[in-house]
Image (cartoon, rainbow, N blue to C red; front, side, top):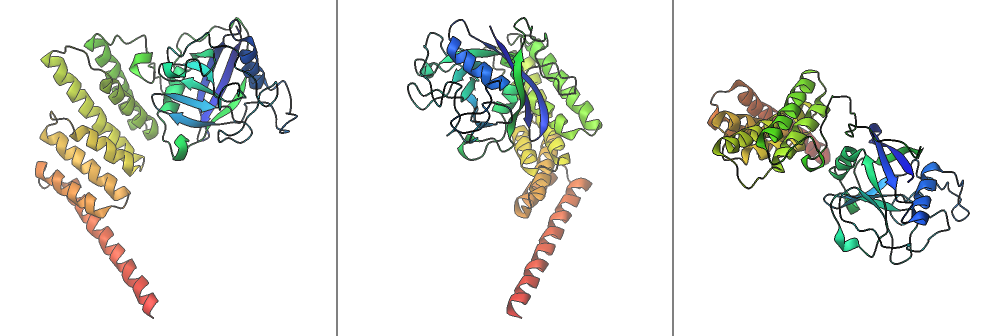
Amino acid sequence: MSKVFFDITAGGKPKGRIVFKLYNDVVPKTAENFRALATGEKGNSSVSGKPLHYKGSIFHRVIKDFMCQGGDFTHGTGVGGESIYGEKFEDENFKLTHDKPFLLSMANAGPNTNGSQFFITTVPTPHLNGKHVVFGEVIQGKSIVRQMERCEKGANDKPVEDWVIADCGELPADYEPETNTVADDGTGDIYEEIMADDDKVDASKPESVFAAVNFLKDLGTKLLKEGRVDKAYEKYSKAAGYLNDFYPEELSEEHTKEKANLSISCSLNAALAALKMKDGKKAIKAADEALAFPEIDEKGKAKAWYRKGSGYLLVKDEDNAEKAFESALQFSPNDAAVLKGLQDVKNLAKIRKEKQKKAMSKFFS
């Protein structure tokens, strides 16, 4: 079976390597198309004149709990791309089914319209059986696919930051995927992006889940102290995600309380990291997640409302910032940081009014 790699960047930053195993034995023509487009060995297209090569192309459509689609190297929008056999080629067969995440399958515009576009499933997608040709699977870099799946999207499900196939090619047939398939992001993180993908975590045992969560939370705190605030936010959010995905049929009162406390802590820390990133929207969202837990105590509520207010200040929403800071004061009266926040709101409002006054005076002068 052929093995192919994609080196991925997002927003210009390296994310790591995804490795695919192709099912040449079941769908040889489809697998060969993908392999050759990864190597670029066929040169330029006689149809478009563009290189028959995935290198430099983007993932133009990403839908959470569904798939990540790419391969349109002619337009980058989902309307282009072409195969090594000509613009389109027929559906080879439908012997393989979409029965698990991380499968490679051909995108198309109907029967027998395969070109170069493909998608990677992130969940089982049985409704696609008999309509799209499965021809491979991800054997390394699943965490990168999960990060892509969860990235911020804009219109038409296109990622806000470009997720680019910066380099690609073929690996030796005897290549063995790395034992630790988690993409190295330079932090020492050893866990997959979502808990269900990680064999190291036994979701039937709270102790196993909490150990992973505490590892990620402690890693986030270490990164925060080092000033690596973006990565700290990622780890706190990832830890919170593990807890969100943990819903066993039975959980003792002690473990239920531990889960809630960990969730609150991770969300509060994510809000703090987001503020240091100067990302008000993420700070507000994380603070709201903490406040949603009935178990949050008064100290936690004060922190959450303060961080929410600070988030509103960053997005220049003085009215909601003022409300949030006043809520924080209910749980922590005379708190110096909260009082300063309220003063900052008044100062911003004063500056805004002065600007409006000057603008009006110019208009009537």
